Each structure stands twice: as structure tokens, then as C-alpha cells.
Image 1 (cartoon, helix red, strand yellow):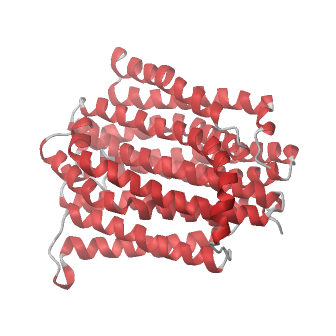
Image 2: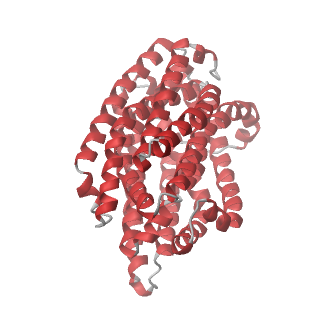
Image 3: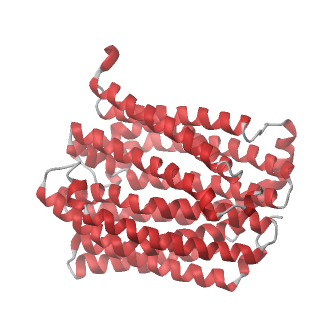
Amino acid sequence: MQVKDRSLLSLSWPLFLTFGIATFQPMMDSWFLSRTSETAAAGVGALGPLLGALFMAITAFSQAGASIASQFLGAERPRQAGTTQTMVLIGSILLGIAFMLIIIPLEGNIVRWMGLSGEAAGYAQEFLHVVAFGFAFRSLQTTLTALIATNGLTTWNLLGNIITIISNAAMNVVFLNGYFGLPCMGVKGVALATMLSWAISSGILFCILRYKVHHKIRRTDFKRSRIILPDWIRIGFPAAVEPVSFQMFQVVLTAIIVHLGIVSMTARIFSANFAMLAVILSVGLSSGNQILVAHLVGAHDYQKANRRLHQSLIAGCSSGLIVAIIVALFGTELLSLYTNDPEVQRLGKICLWCDVLLQPFKAANMTITSALRASGDSKFPAIVGTAMMWTCGLGTALFLGFTLELGLAGIWLGMAADECYRSIVNYIRWRGGKWKNFGVV
């Protein structure tokens, strides 16, 4: 059965678990760090939006390349799809190396820009210095995941990521406790375990691409890539703008929250970890929908692509809402895994209830935006989404947080408003049908 004829659930259920594992890794790192020091967990956690911005740029370029490959596969042109896959693999490694060369010299400044100081800043810089050396592996891991998924082998992605998270947990235990004659490494050990787990994942996923997808890197791919490269840049660069802008938006909000005090910052980081549980199903569904839409656009079956989008919207919004409610109901119990501070738990639980309002709009925005990118229409969500984020979204967050003096809860509700604004505008764009004219085939 061709990928475009598969059901949304058959493609998406392994993606739920794959993204769940990816979400669990930073949560697990926070837990190990919190066993060492809550300040270490808060300091490293404050880097989340910055690292997220870098990783989202890598993900956007990878998925843009994977969408081009999907369109060629949907049009039954496997040779061009293979050339695209080779080009994206090499490009992703170079992108990861470029990020490493940029971050390492600036790591001290970056920590200060985040508003961190004292012990928290020292922990953050120590973590960033180590993981930066693994950016090429993280980039390769992300790209391999996207390429394997676009060929419909999402179950194999899941297997590779399960092995990776187990190895990461084992290395955290070894490095933090100093087993096998190793010194107790603290924050550096958690960072080293993360970096090595990316390397292990890259190796496993490359074997899957080589022996299950049967992808071979040929010399002719480098010549053919000049034909496909303009489309990759046309789709990939705008596709990276909006998610990177979103992560930088989170960086700004984090810097604002830092000024509310260490308690608010800690509550925000811990509650954000659990809020990600509500995003997992939405991300899986939107990713499965992106694969299907790209294949269907390549086959010029626009009616079915539109139907797939609306199926994903209903499933993503409802699942995000249900999971967010469950997480909020058990907020105190979940937050107690990280901290016993009653004020952190109180603020964190308020944030999780605010997240109930955010998740349906976040799911809708992810689903529609990913479908637009899959069709090649990536400029609109990049330009309009970014503009609305920094005007309407930031303005609402500041108004609720400071003018109405709602503090951390107001900023969280501002994020919900931002997702609402952008999802409505992107849906109007999809209904207009211009996305049908942006395919590469």
C-alpha cells in the first residue's frame, strides 16, 4: 500500500510514542538534575527555549526536505526522492556543525542574555558547552527520523528512539553516580549522556534508512541536488522562520519570567515539562498529516488532502484538550516529582490549568501550519505567524501578566491567545486554496 493511501492513525500512532520519548528525554534530564540541585535544573531548564529554537530550525529544514521527497514519492518518482534524501542528510550535518561553531564561542554571553546569574548561570553554561559538540548528531537524528517517517516506516523510528532513551537513562545513572571508576560528573554528566544518546540514535536510524528504506548515497545525487536545492531553500527557509521565531518568543518570555523571581521561573520550567505531555498526540497527528498531505499534493489529490487536514484537526484538538485536563487534575502529584516547595507546586498547578485553554489552539495551529508547509506554502505562516506572535501574542502576554497583574498565569494565557490568533489566520489561508499552487511536482 502506498503511503498516501494509509490511514492517519496507522502513520501517527508510532509518531505519538516517538515524540513522547523525545519529550521525555529533557524531562528525564530535569529529574536527574533536580536530584543534584533544583538550581541546576532551573538553570539548565532556562536554556530550553534557546535549544528549542536551534532544534526547531533543524527540524523545519529536515521536514521541508522530507516533504519534497514525499511529493516525489506521491508522484511515483523515486529517483528524485532519493536525491532529495541525500541532499537533506548532508545539509543537516553541515547545519548542525554551523550551529556548534556559533554557540560555543558565545555560550557565556548567551547565558547572560537569558537573564541568568550566579550558580544557575554556571550550571547552564556548563551544560551548553558539552551538548553543543553534539549538535551535528542531533541534526542528523532529526533528519533521519523525518526521512524514515516520510517513507511510512514510523514504527522503525519508534524502535530506534526506544533504544536511545534507554541508553540515555543508563548513562545518566553511570555519570551522576560515578560507576565503573568514573568521577561523579553532575551537570556535565547529564549533558554528556544527552550528547552520546544523540550519536547512538543517529547510528541506529542511519542503519534503518540504509537497510529498510534501501537508500543509497550515489555520486549522481550531488549533481541532481542542484535541481532540487532551490525548492528546498524556498520551502525550508520560511518553514524554519516561524518555529524559530516561536522559540525565540519563548526565550523572551523566559527572560521576562526570570524577573518575576526564581520561584516563578522554576514553576514555569517544571510545569512546562508536564504541559508537553498534552502536545505529544497533537504533534504525532500533525506530523502524520504532514506526510499524508505531502504525498497527496505530489499526486495532485487536493480534495483528499483537505479531508485529511480536517480529520487531523478534530483528532488533534480534542486529544490535546483531554490530555491537558488530565495533567492539570494531577498537577500537584506530578510536580511533586520535581520539588516539595509548596509555592512552586501552587504556581505550577495554576500554569497547568491555564494550559488547558492553550492546547486546543496549539494543536490546531500545528496541524494547519504543517499542512501548509507540506504543500510548499511555507511563506504565509512564516511571515504572518511571526508578525502576529511579536505583536498580538507578546502584547497580550504583557497586558495580562503585568497590566492586569496576573503574573506567570497571565503570561501563560497570553501564549494561549497567541496560538488562537495564528490558528485562525492560518485556517483562513488553507480554506482559500492557494496552497494547491506551491507543489514541487
